[in-house]
Image (cartoon, rainbow, N blue to C red; front, side, top):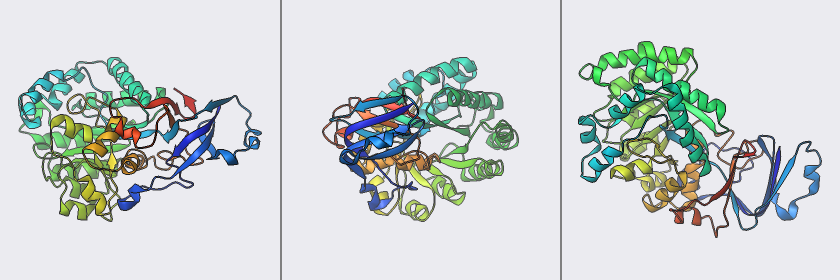
Length: 417
């Protein structure tokens, strides 16, 4: 199958060669082509440019059916990369929503038996098929709103059997979906009830049993730890990351959501691909991140839903850092995978310019999930993951109209979904 999109009002995030990320002031740079065309053949982008330069000769060597789309008045973007989700879960936690309205904190809800441990029990009681079906629905919804790649974490099982069950569900999602999916082993999401007071023993279980079995089945790309106040310590985190690295897993960190936990520093020490949440990021954390290869990833939906402080995105960018924005789609702190809303939140709550927020949800999140060579920009040879908007006035309209779906059509690996 080949797809030719013609008369594009603006072809956005165009890069002739792949880039690692955009950082600091460079995040205000968003290359685009006015009155453009885009050609994809099979699963990859093969050509693009201005309509005035388009020649039918580019179509001569195409030996497969060709779909031609007139995008007059519409824009084309690379699909969003959502580098932080927890979409494999059972049921919901809407009852905790009332606790939040009444003023209970994230930690207070957890202490009452809610939070992550609430989802753990529901997941343990669910079959692999049930988990797959519910996660598939969420994945389809995400794709319909413009997401073309997602990292999906385990972490609601907290036993070897149930963590493996979650990761096998993620593998099934990979096999069925046209979306690019990465799997993250997050056995250190919380300390299960049966190990409260014996946290070191649970860390031992993760290191000695879970990680070797996850690696043996090749079920995960990343290893992750919730390194924060009331969860896992820096020492716990170091032990888990070292074992994950030993077994070929790329490290990531849930860091500094609840306090200055040392999570950012330990993430950089072990060359974590990203440190996520980072609400509590000060001068020391920024200094550590500068010069590293670790992507600070902000999760606006969680901070918004929980009423938490907002990460200092402006200060981070002004210091020269790259910033990524992801959804944190999960049942407790962000029951939404709408990356259009995440983009809007970047502008509304974090005072990011639209160009910065678009970079933060495409090229920078592609880096955060290790797919920057194939996704995140409109580049020849990259996977043909892109969306066509409805007729809109400007790129600013994408974050401005935060309550509506601006995406008309989504293509993943060159095919309309």
